[in-house]
Amino acid sequence: MWKKKEEKKEEKKEEKKEEKKEESLLKELCGDDAKLYDFLSNYLYENPLAAISEKDLDILTEEAEKSGNFRPAVDKAIFEAAQNLGERERYIKVIQNLAPKTIHATEQEKEKVEKEGLTDQAAFLGRRIENQKFMSERAEDIINVASKFYNERLVKLGEEVKREARGKERVKAEREEGRIEEQEKAGRAARKEERREMGREEKREAEKQDKEEELAAEERREAREGERVKAEREEDRIEEQEKAGRAARKEERRED
Image 1 (cartoon, helix red, strand yellow):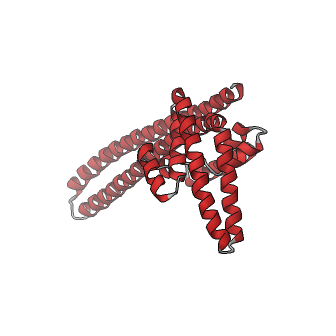
Image 2: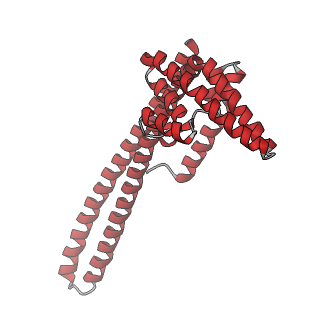
């Protein structure tokens, strides 16, 4: 049988407990560098594929020049830099070029809100300016950490997609099994009803055929059970493989 839902829930609880015991990935990557962690905790995304624009960086930069909002371009630059370490120097220059533009746009906005007496908002914008200065100074470190962070997140997101697909296959198989069992049950009930109208010899022959059908149905059930067991073992193998992969990547990060 497929693992019971209660068992799955317990497994998920245990996984969450294990995750809580470990430091977050970003903290692990930043180590004792609190400033770098504080900055990146506001600039990296758990799901970059959903959060970061699919538009080309050049287009995002052009749009930012008009709107004064450089954040989408900065996010894109950091993500692309993380995926293209061979072009690190080019992206460092891009990020360092975006930072002063962001600072200029933010300073103008800060002056405006200060005149309106919005002190909290002005303080927020002041922190944004400091962040951009930090980004310009530490662009290389930002790219190095972002690369490892996004690499791990993309692997995990890929695993989640595959896990969801396997879950859908399980549900599909369970529904099909339920349909077959209902069909077999209905068939037995129909044959029983038919036998009531039969004579003795005819009934004896029908009962013989029923027994043969029951044996065949049992063989089919055993075959389905074998497929379920095989599928569960394969899922367990994949999960163990993913777990081993996470441990190996963590060890590689420690050695870097």
